[in-house]
Structures are given as C-alpha cells and as structure tokens.
Image (cartoon, rainbow over all chains, first blue to last red):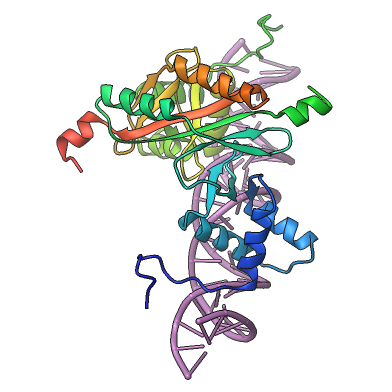
Length: 139
Length: 139
DNA sequence: ATCCCTGCAAAGTCTTTGCACTCCC
DNA sequence: GGGAGTGCAAAGACTTTGCAGGGAT
C-alpha cells in the first residue's frame, strides 16, 4: 500500500538513520564524498553508493537542500524551512544561513516576463566570509 | 616581452579562431563537449582537450561567461558586456539574454552584511521558456 | 517470505594532464 | 629556432548502475 500522497514508502535502515543524524548535526553543506569520508572516520561502515543514493532520496523528499559548488560537486544540507529560500554560505568554514528574498523572486518573475519568458525558475546563492571566520583570523 | 598588463601573450591559431567564431555565431551557452561535437560535425578538426583549454583561456580573459548547468556541466558563451550581469536562459532552445539587476546586487550585499558576512559574491541565473519557444509549440 | 536496501565493483561523464609533435612569432 | 599551442591517450574526480546478499516489514 502507499502512504496516499504518492511518495513511495521508505524503509527505516541503519544507513539512513546515520546519514540523517549526521546531516542534522551540522548546518554546513556536505558532499556525498565528504559525508562518506566523515562516516568512515567515525567508524560508521556505510557504502559510498548508499550515501549517494540516500542523499538523492532525501533531496527528492525535500528533506535536504542541494546545490552545486563551483567545482561542480553536489552539496547537501538539512533543510530547515520548506518554503522557497536561498543560502548565505561561508567560504571559509562552510556554515550557512537560510535567507528569504521576496523582492528577488518578484524581480526575477517580472524581468523574465518582460522578456517574454514563462515558467521561470532561478538559482541564487550568496557566498562570503562569516563573522566568526573574519573575526578570528580575518583576511 | 609582455603586453604590460600582466595578461600572458596569446598566439593566434587556427583552433582559437574557429572556437571564437563559433562562440560568436550563437547567443547560446555551449559545453566544451557540445562545442567539440559541433566543430567535428562541421568537419573542423580540433581536439577535445584544446576546446577545454581554449574555453578556459577565454574565460580567464573575460571573453566568455561561464556557468554550470544543473547536470554540473560547465557552459560557455560569448560575453557581450564586461560589467557584472546575469542571464535569462531558455530551457527549451538555450538562447540567452543578459540582464542587469542592480537591486539584486544591493540586496545581496546588504543581506550578507546584516549577517556579518564580508567579501560577498553570488551566483544567480534565471531559467524559463522564451517567447519563441512557447509561442511556437507551447507547453 | 517479500522485495527494498546495501555494499562492492564496474562503468559512465566531464575534465585535466603528460608528452611529443607542430606551427606561430 | 624557441616555446606556446595542439592532439592523443591516459588519468582523475564525481556519480551512477548492475548484481547478489542482507535486512526491514
């Protein structure tokens, strides 16, 4: 049977629990490779393929935000708010803040319309150095 | 000797001319692979590695804009204006428009500051379906 | 008992790099 | 002629996929 919402049933497994807990324990974006490394260091035995599959699964379920870093690597992070939002990411330590930008959304929609575009979507991420990082050793 | 601006000397070669001309002939973003395919179809014999190297070179010189598509592939396009700008890209045909968003830049800077971030930069691209595409066959 | 989930390893992309040859300056 | 530029193939990095065994329901 289904859960009635079209979302397939997910089994509760050790690997998924560990990955979820690890994501919940940080506010940083992690790559599949990075997360797998982290788990390995902690002695948790989870296959790399499983990490990839699980992260994709979580992303599909809307449980994690994902984006690509400048190297093209996919990064994942626990999702705090379901509503549409963007991120302010520290280049130094990787910590993040979720930010909303209603004006941005409006502007995007309006600009696209003016150019005759429909079905508009956008990507937007902010990068900088957080207070803790530039306060400590500055740059 | 150098050109006095720190930018290394670039030789004018067949491969570079062909790649530059091809980029100039379209307003779409092309991947290195895609561009190489295109050249091959046209009977132009340019190595894939050269395409990669040349595109990077052009990007370094600020002659082309580059961004990553959702698959993580790097895309390149001739750069019309040197000033900071963003793109409105058609998901259907790939054609693009350059757009400026002064308010966006302001908002980004302000928001980052409020959170104590410095050295702010951002990524922003708009995606949609252009008039020509949704006018023709719609969706 | 079923069949989803996992781990391993192989395979697939995109991209970079090493090396010898070529061609611009 | 010298050295940047090129082509080819090998290598690298990230990610996906096939398959058989294991575990959740």
